[in-house]
Amino acid sequence: MAAEAQVPAAGPANPLLIGGDWVASTGDGALVVTDPFTGGVVGSAPRGTAADVDRAVAAARRAFIAGDWVAASAARRAEHLRALADAWERRGDELAELVTSEMGQHAALSLGNAVGPPRVLRYYAELADRLVEEEVRPKLLSDSATIVRREPVGVVGMIIPWNYPLSLLVSKLAPALAAGCTAVVKPAEETPLSALLVGELCIEAGFPPGVVNVVTGGRQTGAELVAHRGVDKIAFTGSTEAGRAIARECAERLRPVSLELGGKSAAVVLSDADPAQVVPHLRMRSFANAGQTCFLLSRVLVPRDRLEEYVAALTDAAESIRVGDPRHPDTEMGPLVSERIRARVAALVDEARREGADIRTGGAYANGPGHGYLPTVITGVDPSSRIAQEEVFGPVVVVLGHDGEEDALRIANDSRYGLGGAVFSADEARAIAFARRMETGTVGINSYSPDLTAPFGGYKDSGMGRENGPEALDQYRMYKSIYLP
Ligand code: NAD
Image 1 (spheres, rainbow, N blue to C red):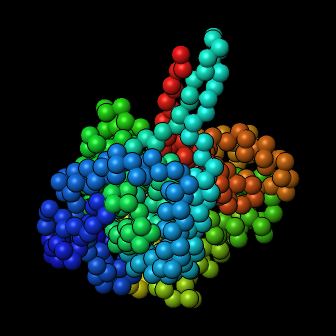
Image 2: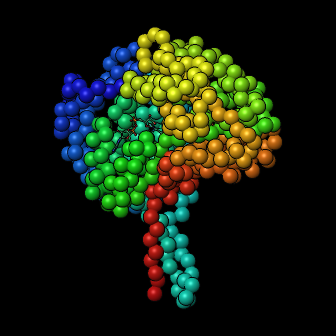
Image 3: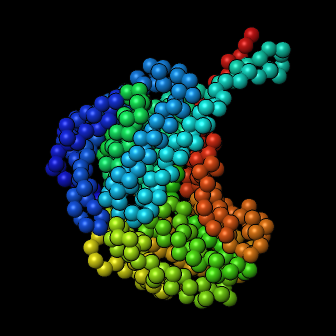
């Protein structure tokens, strides 16, 4: 959790990464990061000002124009990505511990998540090695030809949330750098320290000055970055509300923007599915990261005649999740990131309770220190109710009954979101056929196991643009046609 405190002040001890150097903020505002479980102070970082953003954008622009990044061959950029992966691997444990301290992610999960980014960096290094930046194409109406180029879009402003602060940073940074862009990173106010450590790794990896800049700060700092005239593209992950505000700002400037936003993803359980297979999977995928995961399977649609059986099994599963100290090997779930987020989760559940929802388990703060919230299973609500429609971003699952495939499809698609989803069936072909009809950007069969080589992103209010896979490179490139005479 970050407070609005002015002390400790920003200064040489709390610098920003701009133009390859650690520099003091021009302001004296500070983000004080406190451990969501112990409440102890983890550290502080500057609350970046408009002038800080301006310096960082100018440094990223200089690095872009200087040519030793863009004009360097993609293979050289790939070497840097590999060097960053090496540096990351050397300090992966430190990064993981920092994420647990900053936002309360369970240590097992943050350690697991620290392993992914270097693999992603190496994956984009490989794609950079094979990058086709130019092709010559015969013209349709003459004997001549056109050179079709794919050029890096330029300076990318990256605005990152706190829930997976490392992987959601690298899912933007790796393809953008591979494509030849330069970056100004604005991490979430809750998790500035891990982003600064990534900045340190970029220095270790020998990136030319200004290729990666990190300006910490709050929403205002993010808004300054979005509004800056020197930024060529914005890549954002976070709430739909903030995404909409950012998209409006970008529309005004006709600036490309990619948005990875919220979700209320449906797990559709068909009549032939086996609860013994479905429920353990939901235990993992519906409560991951204390529910602070965008693709969480938070709406579970089960055959109406087996509703009670599934609710009982999910209740047992939720009650078996041990909530507490995120560093303790006997626990599985840490606290929510902040009191603000816990209060929001509680307000949504309390509202559902007042409206007659059946809160089968949970629905209360966890005992002990920190912002813990108990894994919660809710049923007895209409699919159109707020608790069944709105992203809660906490460990809260709503179980709904359906009357067969067509009804399940109608309920699954009756959402303003479309980010994740899963279909469970004994018949894989039947599940795949169902998945094809779901209005969502990603869907799993008898599980939800995202693949970093395939495009990830949302339909409808879950966003636009895609991360992961070779498709992510296109988010950071523009076409240019050079017509030969
Ligand atoms: P948020 O969207 O407000 O913040 C995410 C990032 O965007 C932060 O870096 C923040 O400083 C920045 N930001 C916010 N408003 C901005 C603006 N107008 N211009 C520029 N930058 C801006 O998220 P939050 O308030 O911390 O979380 C609230 C809700 O957001 C959660 O309950 C959840 O529903 C959703 N969320 C979703 C994801 C996801 O992965 N899809 C991640 C985090 C939060």
